[in-house]
Length: 241
Image (cartoon, rainbow, N blue to C red; front, side):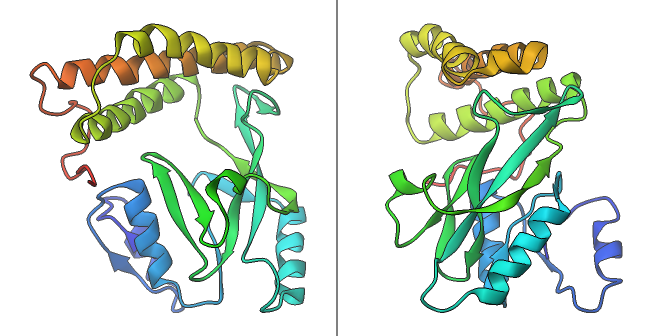
């Protein structure tokens, strides 16, 4: 287990289990920390599970069956369907119900993407094919937010990370993106990806996602006009060039 100096009871609980190997490293980014954890894994296969995710019994059986029958010539990874629960219901549309690589052969994949929206990519597969691989049966239940207030806090935090990263890499503010991207994102989630089929939660998700895109660009503007770093960004977070 790789811990970024948590202040709760994580370490105390983890050390109660003799088979748990406990390590610490300062948090320097979602992608960076998860790749560091991958390197520390000893087994042939790695199942990546976030703290807010739960494995259903059907998925557990599917994973066990796959590992039992896997061979050296088989696939290097399997995608897993992630079902998010938000505002009292499972979200099946709007791009929120999707399959991503989570079960991978050690050394055959790594985390990539833009922090904090990371995902696993297989080394022997073009990135444009990453959402086309085989998927296991069963769902990974994702309790992404406690409630709508928690979602708003997350949007504020994640948009700060994205803006700080982009500004640190020299990406300039764009008025066109500020005006266009939120509208584009709403149409994509609510209409093109049928978010309207999820009722009011689907509308809230589309609207809040659009607002997230607005915040990202607005914060890039802020960072290019005198702000050193967003006030809600943890002090040890650094831009990886």
